[in-house]
Length: 185
Image (cartoon, rainbow, N blue to C red; front, side, top):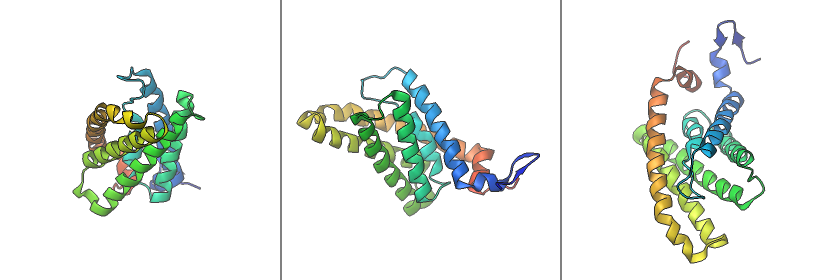
């Protein structure tokens, strides 16, 4: 089994990738619900707080599990928002997958030379750029360039804030230390 002791989850449990994906996926669902309760500055603009579990997972999961978590996040957000079978889910999927690859790749190539703040900003900017590109091709045409400045500015701001939170959480969380294997129980 996954090794539950009478004192709580064991190290083995937190190293089980399926358990980590399930926990972080549930966290994505919760943050998606919270995010949809917050008023948006523009109808298409989200804060991106549901990306926090994705950001944390970079140091916890190998690429296949990490990409699975990204897909779980998109499906969860789409279910919460009621947009699962709409172009909005396509936009979310494209932005999330491009951002996931860039974030994971930057961490694996540069290690901790790039902080969680830098990784988060890279992810936010590439996600927004992918969505703007998709919007220009499928919906708005050349007019998509008009939404680019506020969209990218919001991504820069929220990416930085999420990165600060993730950086602090990864340094202070006992759960994160156990899940990453850097804490002795």
